[in-house]
Amino acid sequence: IRKIQRPIEIPESGLVCDILWSDPDLRIMGWGPNERGVSHTFGSDVVSAFLHRFGFNLICRGHQVVEDGYEFFAKRQLVTIFSAPNYCGEFDNAGAMLCIDENLLCTFRVQRPRVTVFSK
Image (cartoon, rainbow, N blue to C red; front, side, top):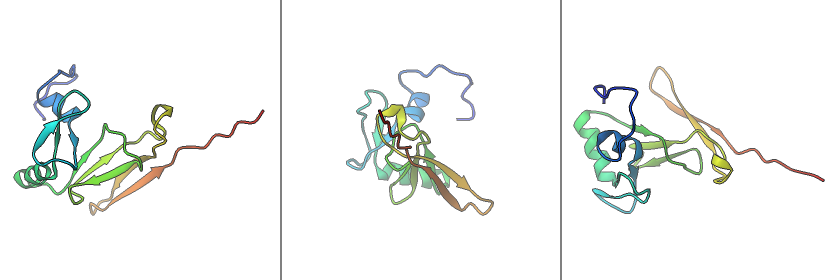
């Protein structure tokens, strides 16, 4: 990842595309096709194998709308964070920010969509 030259145009396939567009999927083990039409989906077994291979405890990812602003996967080994509440005015999702302190304690700050009331 460090060797990827930046800035970069996102290609339609390959490592950079997969880092950006691959998504977790509760329904599968291993790898599968992605409903986005690009990249792949992966199961909890892929997450566990990746963490073990590289000696990590957690994968933090974004780029996918989740209802509560953040969502865990694979027994809390992966978290998806999405920071834009009410994304595009269509999803009524919360946005979240992951805060990590000096002891690596993770907490979330969640911003719920604002309710706008119009009157005549």
